[in-house]
Amino acid sequence: MKVRLGVLGCSNRIRAILKGLLRYDPEVEVVALCDPDETKTSQFKELFSPGAKVFASHEELIDDDNVDSVVIGPWNALHASQTIAAMKAGKRIFVEKPLATTFEDCLALKMAHLESPSKLMIGFTLRYSPHFRKIQELVASGAIGKTVSFEFNETVNFNHGGHIMACWRRKREFTGCHILEKCCHDIDVANWIVGSRVSKVASFGGLNFFTPENEHRMRELAPSDEGHLAYCEWPSARGKNPFTSDKDIIDNQVCILEYANGVRATFHTNINAGIPERRTYILGTEGAIRADSRVGKIELCKIGFGEEIKDCGTGARGGHAGGDNVLTNHWSKMLHEDVPSLTGVQTGIESAVVSLAADEAMLKGQVVDLGEYWAQLDAVSNNG
Image 1 (spheres, rainbow, N blue to C red):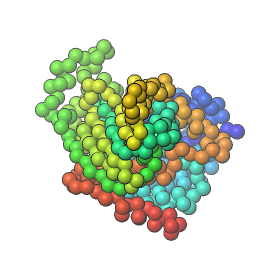
Image 2 (cartoon, rainbow, N blue to C red):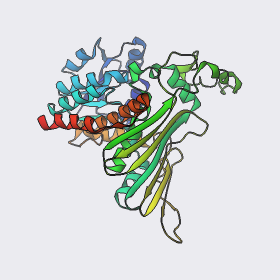
Image 3 (tube, rainbow, N blue to C red):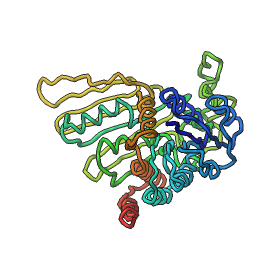
Image 4 (tube, helix red, strand yellow):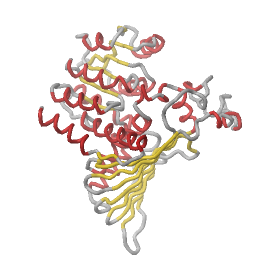
């Protein structure tokens, strides 16, 4: 049966996952588009559906009876309001990460979810990656005993950093904060692996590299093979200066998380990396797991004399470690079958709350106790 999609926000990320979905599922058709940039809607029409109708507002698109399912991918700050509107209209929803940029939006989303029959999937690509699924499977099986502590990180290539500092992601009013925009699916995977809520968080970070005094690095480094300046290879940064742009986000941050079940973790992000990583190092009572999704490595070693490191890799590697294909396949099943979402409203809210608390801890310079946040969210569920 044909499924008619309406797209809110014609971003590059939505373009990429739609390509994957349409390659896999010929029964999906893009029938409606909405984006303030007419160039982007024209590109989507040419790429996906010349006959797609262009709407002036998200409300008009969501209210159209010809739209079965809504794809939400504009600026982060618009995700919650558009998702709530789609929930109230009873649409099936795919929303790009993050689900919300404020705690108030998290509460509103929780309430709307309780009152809506809508099926929702969040674009937490890492949750669908064979790499991270294998790590979660190993931990859940008790392969390293009981988890005690772990480290994880996301450090990105210098040109990726230039992109972030040149496009809309550089402003909190659009993103919420950097750790929420870039790393909320890393937080989601950590929450999933630990199987508990974060109870306390401390964090430190700042804007220490992408500042005017360091713009000389753009010309000190050799240009790309295509002649683009260093830090400006990505299209969003060409002709711009990511070092002098107006911005209010950080370029590096570390967090300390304590979970309710006693597990402790550290997270590190930096967007000017000579060696990009998405690394996980988990220590349990009976062994350890060391992994890096970018190179596709998963190693496990038991504690004890004569124990050797075992290769547990899945072959998945890269920025999303094979998660995109699995995500689009699961999305297709959700559109046609009664298949549950692996990344629903609750996972999106919990990731957002931890990310926002980490930002709060950094800005206030103090440990943030998440108990009151969870209590307010649980009260919504109980009252509902």
